[in-house]
Length: 195
Image (cartoon, rainbow, N blue to C red; front, side, top):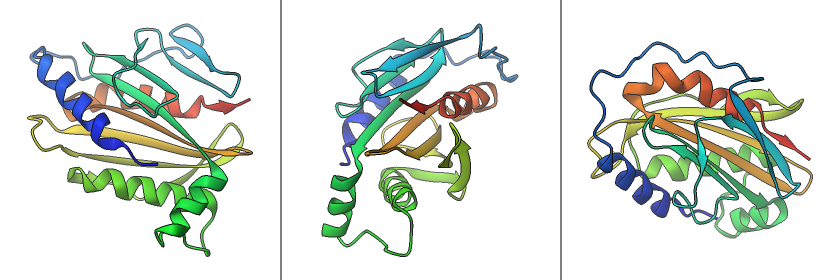
């Protein structure tokens, strides 16, 4: 259920190979959802829109059903989908499932806690309730530094619950580029639709 070490290793490699940080514009990116995003259908299971400049990859996370990135802009996203019943069973086995919380809240709490364990946290938000595709969803934001990475990273995570699955939409960029790209990363999360 939780394989973020390969994800973090990929992040480290990508960050260390890209040294084009000087002189980067920090004003917010203004993209049109209709013109500047491409809608991607994943196995007729869900649809999500990503900026046209992001391309499909397989190097970010072995468990992701979708991975897109732009190494030059330092923008990344993955979608992890898990069978809801199996996730509940797994959390109960490790005594991490709280009966007084919803399935979605349990999933979001467990995943954010797991991710934060590998991060030297600079700041983080509470897990917030939002609406995505007309359904209750959760969003969490944090920034911090991974061991061995010389840059702070800004994460924006979205969590949503479908009929049979739960989904985590994980997006990130360098903290120094968050002002420019955070609106775009939030738009990716908002565009998620289970089919």
